[in-house]
Length: 609
Image 1 (spheres, rainbow, N blue to C red):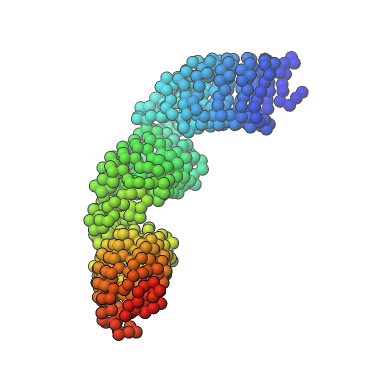
Image 2: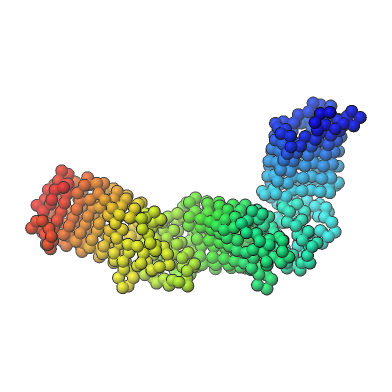
């Protein structure tokens, strides 16, 4: 009379406790339920099955689906009369063990929705098996060929015909076996499809391959899945474009595609463009390397930590966008992509170190606009960092290539444009340009001379850089020293830190420097003495220290020198007091110098702060 217990002749023959909050361990005492035939414990919270379950010698049906089991108990192997075993929707991991082969009467086995990674070939001993379900074990490795042959025997005649067709159309597949239930329901779907529609050979193979993508990447949750797996013609499915009935483009950007992108063999051999950008993809299957005609692959804005080395087999690839992911490394095999013109790797915060030399050489060799050679010949200081992941130099270089490819009909980059956009790009990324108060037009297709704070001469060379009070943080890049025509440098009223780079001494056209009210540390670079055209130098900031370099005495045109509110020591070069030309100075020396007299030795032309 107890709930779930059914008896025949006072023998307990069925226990049905499905969805009943059963938890913990299922334990039995000896062989006291020797007549039990059906045991249903599905949809509970069971974590373990006691070894005595093997004593249920007359059990024919055991349903443990929808629980929390982590392994298949070896004691199940003693249940040689079991006909149906359902272990689906648990947390079972590892390989299917050899012990199951002892269950020689088993006719139905369900292991779907677990985390199984392999299967033993001993399963072929289950000669009475007629139904074997194992789909949605996402990490399943290669299936032994003898198991594939065994599963072929479970197919109906119609299913065998479709399986043979797919084997002939879809070659080079290393993980799709055209049998039911492995590794997902794609084969079942294509069998049902073939029973409802007359599909020619091309459509059969293309629908099989695209449906594999749909199932592996959680297609039922896509933002737009219009007509997918429903309309007769795959060319009507959302994002699929088919000139001459060949799938040549798959555009599924920003469509909530997630999980794994898996393809089956080479059944999409004409695919030219594959756009999966701005999704939540975590893994790319190795079979992507079989898309031999692919020229554009956009995987940007996903959750990829690794990419398969087989991408190096895509010999026709010209554009590869891997930006905005979580990549930890880049395979050297990408160096085999001899036609690649654009490779974007920016916004991958987990990348560290240098790009593999094979890939760096490829980027330089296939640089469509000759950007790398032009930049490095004009900005040699970047040679050690331009191909190092995460650096501002690498990001600026990638940004130029990206904008050129995306907007090549709108912009025409001269050598001058390339160099200046690169240098300004390094500044943008080094000083957190996305947080500036104003960054109008920066890193857009607009000419760099129109970017906020930048002014140029008629040749497009930057001559004025005025970023007063613009929330500029970070450090000045060394590349800034290659703005050779710069006459005005204004970063006053910001939060720049670190040292004032010595490369500033290369800016021999500078007349005015305003770097005050920042957070620079260290000493005043002696290289400032090379800027003989300088008329105004303002470095008061409260943070500079060390001696005043004697090289400042070479600045014979200097009219204003403000060094106060620092921790400087030493003396002002006496030669500065001989300058002339400061019409507005409050003294007769022709130069206005303000110092901290408590630290710096007074000079005849100095004003104390």
